[in-house]
Structure formats: C-alpha cells, structure tokens
Amino acid sequence: MSEQITPEKHKEHLEEKEPKQPEQYSVVLLNSDYAEFMCVLLSLTQTFGIDNQKAMHLTQQAHMHGETCIATYSKDIAETKAEQAYNQLVALHQERGLETPSAIYQAQPYSE
Image (cartoon, rainbow, N blue to C red; front, top):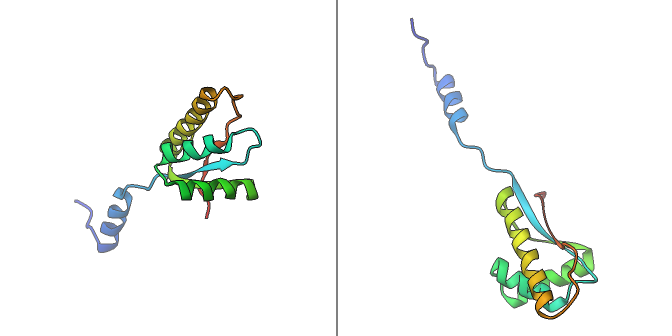
C-alpha cells in the first residue's frame, strides 16, 4: 500500500527540492599605507567595473574606517574577484617601479 500524500507532505517535499542560495561573501578593501592611491583606484575600476567617483568614495571609506565592502558575491566569485583586484594592484605597482603592497582585498562572509 502506498503512502497518501497530504498537502503538508507535498509542501515539505517541495521545500526539500528548492535550491539553497549560496552563502554570500563580501570583497573587502582594507586600508593600507603602502598601496599607491591611484593604483588602488585603477584596480577598483578595472576589476569591479565601477566608475572613478565610486572608486574614490570606497577608497576614502577604507582609509577612514580601516575597511569597506566593495561588492558581495558567492564565495568562489568573491575570492576570485579579490585575487584579481590584488593581482591588478601588484601589476600597477610594478609598472610604476613601486614596492609590492600586501594583500588589501579579502573575501569575507557577508554580514549585514
């Protein structure tokens, strides 16, 4: 004898099949005394596709508060974006003959 499907069981079954949203991570820009300001702006505009005004605002926020959130993605994308932004920053420093800065981009679990 097969089990009867009640409306409650049907709802439970549907809820089990709904895909879970991936955990969100923020790409965070950390303040740095060693990263050249213009290089940070360029890495932000080139990696995240944001305009100069927003890049300037985010950089100032990081300077004033120690860090600021650039964008929020799934974990894999946030880690990739942080790495891309840092690699871009290093390349810009090398082009200018400047010392390589420490990592100033991090992927961190998103919190509101």
